[in-house]
Image (tube, rainbow, N blue to C red; front, side, top):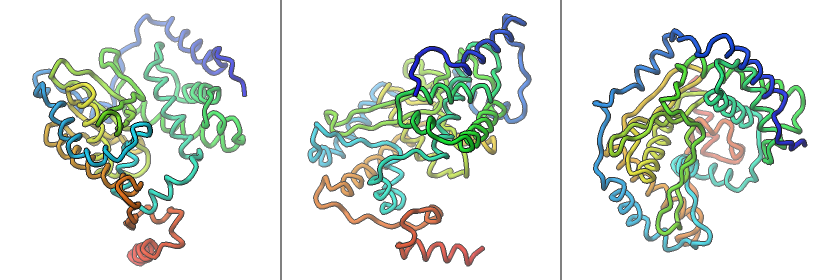
Length: 344
């Protein structure tokens, strides 16, 4: 695998193409927004006078409550091996625990859908941060593929080894997703402070419990105790409003603990339907997120055997049973699928 850090062919071509476009005008012409773009803009935009201000001690109160309620779990954790918890672990313990634990035990392996999502996210990141105007989605995907293939990661190895047909299918789907984003979102202006793939870590109980998150897209920034940041999750596939809102409430809690000021809004954007679901952040939302986080961490610790013998995982049948690797030997899952098929 080539690891030369110099610019790749796709990146050079994209830079040259954008440079030629930039020669035409020193500044890109104002673009008219379509209805979907205008909807996103109107639903996310707030004048400063309407942005909430939070108490200076909010983050301290939330942290104290978290650490108090998690003291028993923290006491059972070796500080050398902290308990890492993110939205995936929380979703797992509130879904089918049996399926979640099975997935936890498997060695991680890249799949075409996962690789497609990673390439599309990387291409969107490049598009947001590219300094020249309006690069084509296909060019961004090619640059993303080149960049990711040259990395020293498992994804780089997967991309390097995948066949021509698989790579072409991946490229086609990634281009479609990047096009969905560019057609559904208004151009992100520099003064909106857009950032992509931002990581957040919060250490609790002297680092014995660590909460982790990665935001697909953020806009804005707080102004002292006045909220100003928007956190956005980009989604493909079906809309699962409840689950996706829970994920973003967890992110709002992390951001509050990290900066002291909560984000003002959290939003899920569905690329295929060009729809956005938003929640305004207030103290009630943060308290709901805190209670769920505590309950999830305690249950995760029980399943992992930190508080005694590992707890028996619960089976919660639902739509994911249809592609669950345990379905052939799961009576509950089989019964659910049979009933679902009868209702069709």
